[in-house]
Length: 317
Length: 322
Image 1 (cartoon, chains in turn cyan, green):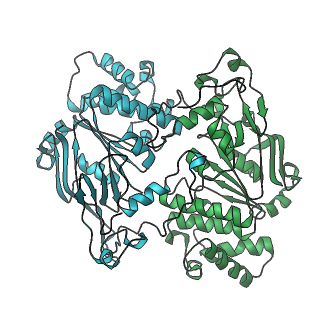
Image 2 (cartoon, rainbow over the protein chains, first blue to last red):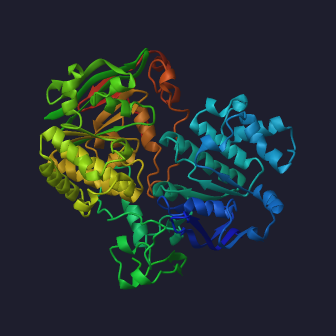
Image 3 (cartoon, chains in turn orange, green):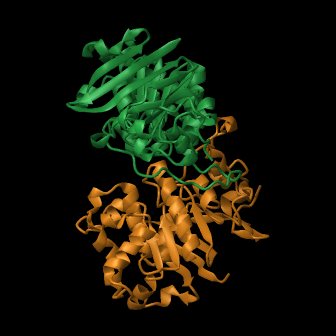
């Protein structure tokens, strides 16, 4: 399959503070991220809060401007596009947000919310707008009778379905899913994940799935990128690949299984994620890593591939 | 011996009855999990045990809450105040609901021992530093001089646990203690609570929405749905032979890793809110097993050994979750 998305060395630096009494500080939210997303594949990006996964999602859709690197969508360099060209392209690349409550205008009816992408893009559907919206709602498992409701009248799960219907309206090829189920109850999360699986099979969609939940990513995705403090520390070619980076192994060990027979004694990782404003030199994980050596504390490891499985570690497992 | 015995608890806010028929018990050195989705009444159960309902305008309308042989529902507020934060500790989801942002950590934790154990300030500080040390907090003396905003979420949650432990409690109620934390920090806190239960012979009530956390830590489980305890039993029985269709469906909603390729199906429909609890069995509109009787008659708890399930068909074999 050809690559739908090619990301090279993508970086984003934010600065904060700065004023009469304070020096401005800057942090690398995303630091030199590269990967390929082939057509019809699902890549999961997993990491803890502050690892840069949501920033990465926004950079890829160019919702924020990168500080460096390139993004190619279907062979087109996105960063060379004018705003007008970008708007046209966005019909083919859409995002589903974590918080369905803030993703929809509270004063819009569901019908208007789902029709909005057509207005924005100046596209007239082949059939009448009413039929088109009804069809989209049915596609995401909603009763078209809900179309005249307002967002506050429907549940969180239904709102997330509306968010997905909006994203699908213009028949995109790529969906970036930023924690689409994080604010939902588990029973509703499972419904939405099931829906996304069906849509992928029916419409041949390609997904970039951002999540903090490793078991969900393992269930849903074909490949996994593990991020820590702005960098990809490991790229697992499939979901059964064993962890080679100590951080990935820690993540896997910290994820409990829903089976009381598979209890394990957790050997907790000491310490917490350091502040991204104040990163130690060398490998950002070195302070918490059981295998860290002097080398790790002054030389940042680069992502190296070995038969498709990449890891950024001086002492991989 | 059971430290905490809740029997047939019912709670009302005016005419609204968000909680009814909740029973469970927890003994020393035991962890009980209360699990359910949002709006199932888990936190309200914790509030009831802590005697905090009057604060939010609720009252206990039925049942008993027995702590160490004493019925707390009849306890006057003055006596309750001695127990609360003393022999019964509470850890909430957001550590900042328990911490004063304007006060250094040391004095906040000291206050507990001064108030509940009648220690002097010096004794209390020594105790604070010792407890912080047992919670694997580096440099306790230094931490005592910090303010809450200078600490990470995981560290703040440890301080709240230290405050609960300072009074040497018999029962600890932890209401979603790790929900706001990252997984690696969650693993640290869960391990900490586990160790405390064993070392101090605590009775721990762990309230969570996460069946994986229950599987990892609990001895016994109560499954709640729409303000009722729909099933209870030892953790092994709950996961291996769930008798309530809701428990089965809830377990089937969690991705089980690689060995299992079954598709996640979810549960059709949504969790009812307290204003529209269905008649009969509260789960019947979403239940694949439901029959006409479920829409009219609330099921009795069918007890079988140490397990119970509130389902008309609890005695019949259900399809096991995939």
